Image (cartoon, rainbow, N blue to C red):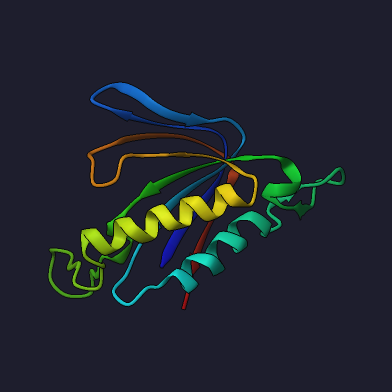
Length: 146
């Protein structure tokens, strides 16, 4: 699994111009599922997202986690995180999991975050979405389960 996470002051997902989910301060997580990814990968990354110390403490240092901040999470599926752009001009997505496998792990990951007590909003799997993000920092990280 591959995640692109951004610390946000707000983020929202719209479908056909209508807002379907939004969060205040916290994280926007773009989640890609690759061939061979498992629930173990999702478990590892869910804990990492919840506990990664990327929020500022009183001294202005990145020393607090999402759980310590009582932050919210917007999780958006994004198979394009598995694009291979090394050859030619058209990206290959051959390393991305099938939509069925990806949706199962996406749902599993979201549920793991909820089980940790986080407020989680989601996009709509396989939909063409408009994602609006106010990146706080900017702070952006790429996490990989392998």
